[in-house]
Amino acid sequence: MKIASWGLEKRDLPRLFTAVAGMLVFSVGINLFVVPAELYNGGVLGISQILRTLLIRYAHLNFGSVDIAGLINLLFNIPLFFLAYRSIGRGFFVRTLICVISQTMFLTVIPIPAVPLVEDTLTASLIGGIVAGAGIGISLKNGGSSGGLDILGVYYTKRRQDFSVGRLSLSVNLFIYLACALLFDITVVIYCIIYTAVSTLIMDRTHSQNISTEVFVFTKEEPDQIMDYILKELVRGATYWEAKGGYTEETTNIIFTVISKHELSALKRRLRILDPQAFVVSKEHVGIEGKFVKHL
Image (cartoon, rainbow, N blue to C red):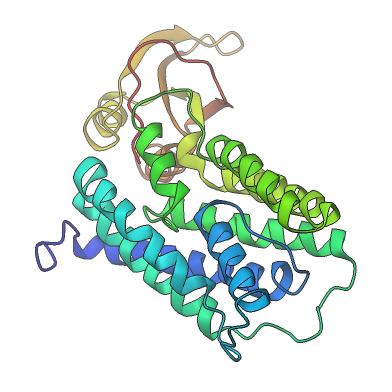
């Protein structure tokens, strides 16, 4: 059943709530660790933060206790919403829209400490990177995004097998921080780069849909049900053959497939139902040549 023809189903709601929770985690990392340390995020939000600082310092505008960076970020994301809607899909567009609005609300209402929670800037950049990167990864893993470069990242990930969402963010952010070097102290830029590198690493590790994994399933049961699940529900190719155990000399079936790390978790859950005795061997970050569709 479709929800108001938005391209979502009722079963998508738990993932949508989790994606919004990821935005909350991200906003906590930004407002409690990054902003108090006078550091800047990368991407569109980073541009928004820079504009906020310029408006306060040089235009002498006073916004009180409200951080308008989130509102500026929302305005910048409007053109990217059209890209998400037309090129990625209606469901992704709706989830992204909800996530960006949620992010804007969280960035606006979460109070920024007058005194930094962590006085050491390096520590603040590391903690902020871990928390913010995990938040973005959680959102991406559940089909949402924080907009901005995440929309571009998912857009190109669907078209290139070797593309990394985090790599795009890191590349673009280097140019952003070069501009920061001209406006602010170079030390701030160095800490911002450290923060970005940490958040990029955590984001890619959390966004398990971006990790290709080869899987061998050893089962003594008939492989039909397992193959049916891989082919029809995961929509992945698979190959199986009969083998003989070296110690027991008993006949066993070996199923081979390449899936994402996220899909591997789903496969393991199904195996606990179909064959609790199945033996699984997996290897992450395998090289793939040929057609391998990103299921995002």
